[in-house]
Length: 398
Image 1 (cartoon, rainbow, N blue to C red):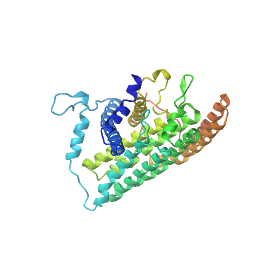
Image 2 (image 1 turned 90 degrees about the vertical axis):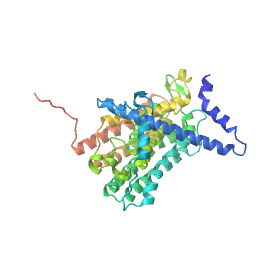
Image 3 (image 1 turned 180 degrees about the horizontal axis):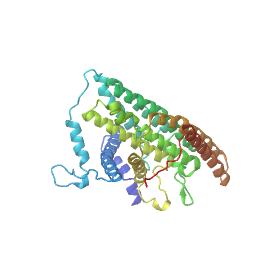
């Protein structure tokens, strides 16, 4: 029964593909996989927007969406009909294009943002036998295709013929390039230890259990450091708070998509969440065992459920950070990337190499932990002293 539930979608796809003539079956398999990916993540996008607004409302001691329900009914469904209302509004809202804008590039920019991020879903292993595209260079493909979003950001800012849009685009490109370096370096540690660029092989290397802990890379000194670097850089890559400088409303109105309205803005909005889903899925793949269960007695739960649970845990973390942390300044943003995260990512490569070549035992844990924690403390202390910063002290009036 557990295996049937685990392979439910695999068997369903095979049954549907079998309905087509043999000559059409390869094309039908690709089309069904693509449709499933788009539908699943589009649905997750709709639900996540409501969950985020509800979560931020609770953090800020207010209600989130709780009125809109199913159309033409009295069912409110706790406000989960809000995405339907938002979608209808985006479709019928006026599509305004500035008179001096480059209309062709202005039109193509949202698509150029959404399509590469959608393609990154092809190499994520969603469960056992549920890897859409098993490439030997899957990790390389993920980062190479995802980098296309930077071009889309520049297209949007430049084509709008608006200085605020151009400022936002330049900020976004500088930020994305800066944080892409530690992001990729944190993934390189996993590739070094796993010995493969294939996302499927990386997950398979983490499916075992050592005692009461799974063999996930996050449960190693270099893996924990790489995981923290990865999620921090991925947050900045997604332009999420506290790294949301490209769309700083208090400074440049709305950033690179200032001159977008209606459905074009909705595509940008969807692309941001697709980027979050892709980053969360890759973080789960590289460091959290992918679709693997955390304990042998939990393997009766479908593997695809574990993958999506880990990915949505990453999304919950981003929502939590958005509701609690203030926005950084531009100089703080760049200093943090180049003077703190990049050196730590390089040091973490050394820690991963030592972990690979040293014999298992306590000595390996101690050496790798010192290699990771020592530079972290030195870099953090050096940056604080250089900027004249210290611990925040709260004083209350008598």
